[in-house]
Length: 116
Length: 117
Image (cartoon, rainbow over all chains, first blue to last red; front, side):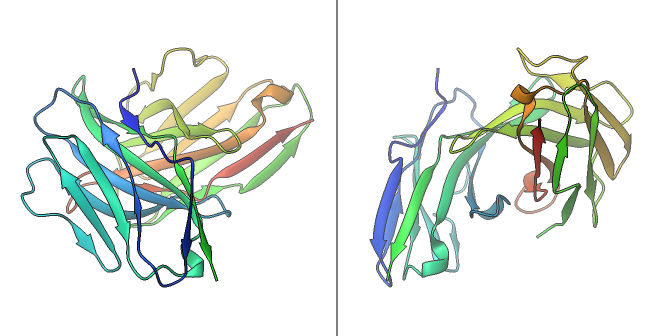
């Protein structure tokens, strides 16, 4: 079963506008971590922002913020004031404990295109 | 953020040869590293977890003898694709989790694009 779901394969946003990328997850763990990564065309995976399952406040990091709704098991990424350089693939990921270690599960990604 | 390097960034080889990819954590120690494979326009697929001082843990469906992993030190893990075939062509990317804040955040290498002719 898919544990991380990103329902938007592609998104467009006008430069300087805000955009929300959706992510829902499925876990029975009480303690888990949620991450967002950006992958530009070069292929590198860039860590953007993190939300812990016990964090009461939504995470923010510069122009990135999370709309974390624990009861709905969603952690949507909001990018404010979009820039052309934001065009990339965005992956949502969950860290879950397994057999004494951690494993990270990635969603299928959303390709964001920022329009000038 | 932390720095993870990966070498080589790109390799082209003939079918039947072996290719070694190195993953290094440059400014922190990593007892665990992860190896992923990514097909074009797809997500990352975890291949194996590399453990310093012990055997790697492979995901279901990943051939251990095909993809040899060695975690030689706290800063180096290697993935060797043995007897490579064209279907092994892919983007291979490693990561290392770093303790601290945020906890166990994965930092990725820049990836290796393997093309097997």
